[in-house]
Amino acid sequence: MNIIFWIIFGLIVGTLANIIDPSTSRGGILGSIILGILGAILGGILGNIVFGIGVTGFNLPSIAVATLGALLLLFIERAFRRSS
Image 1 (cartoon, rainbow, N blue to C red):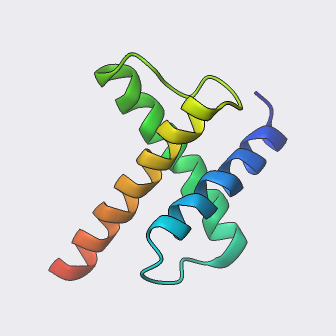
Image 2 (spheres, rainbow, N blue to C red):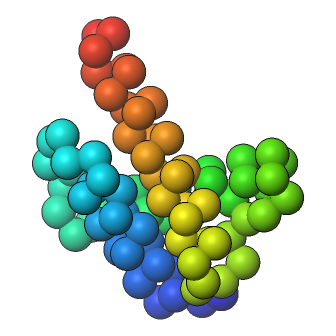
């Protein structure tokens, strides 16, 4: 997968995660792209370990796994903000 794919995929996933959990502003478009890419990496790794599925391309299961990874990152971020 090339860099343009990851940017577009990250934007879609990051936007979905921010729509599902709209608690605070997270840096606009660039923040959504970074959240989506990191969520895809985390979701892909965990999804592959637990369910045997990961981010394999631009399809619905990959978007779902990546969105769950992004939501997990938002949950971790919120936990660290509350503790400090």
